[in-house]
Image (cartoon, rainbow, N blue to C red; front, side):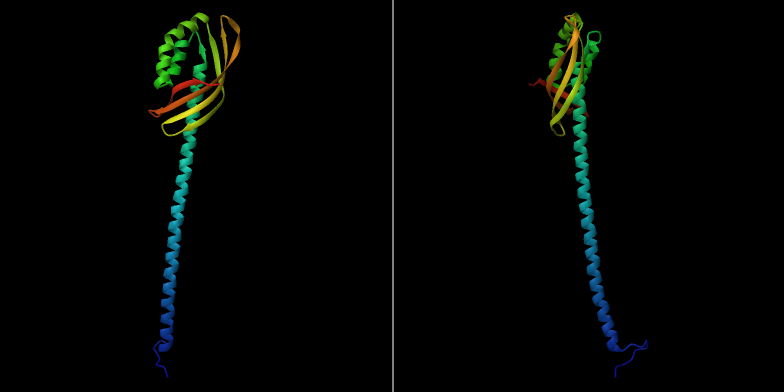
Length: 184
């Protein structure tokens, strides 16, 4: 006959219960460790996807900033009025840097005379623009623009079509045009 404990269990039953509890403790630890590992993996995966989304957002924002700067340069470059040409040329130069700024600056005085003598007026508009490439520091954009040009020899005006390749550089927190080429 098995000895009885004071709370009514036999020694055999007590040992069986102890073994069962220790098995459950091992299983419980395994389940807890598995849940903790799954939570850590889920947290890491969430962080990875959040980083990816942030990177895509940054890239899209850069693309929009590049397009906006290129469009503005194209409008400034194709719009002028003989009465306000000094301000118009300053607008172009404010969005310029590097080679383009040097070239445009060198021609501003001569262009001012030519525009004033011919009483030239042009109003440009961007029809399409697309980013060819862009990174954190440089970008290339193709722009299709039209400009209606009026002057002494053509008072009724004519539309001119421009296909421009603009190279931009990110300087001092702004995208500035460093080169403009006419393309076919």
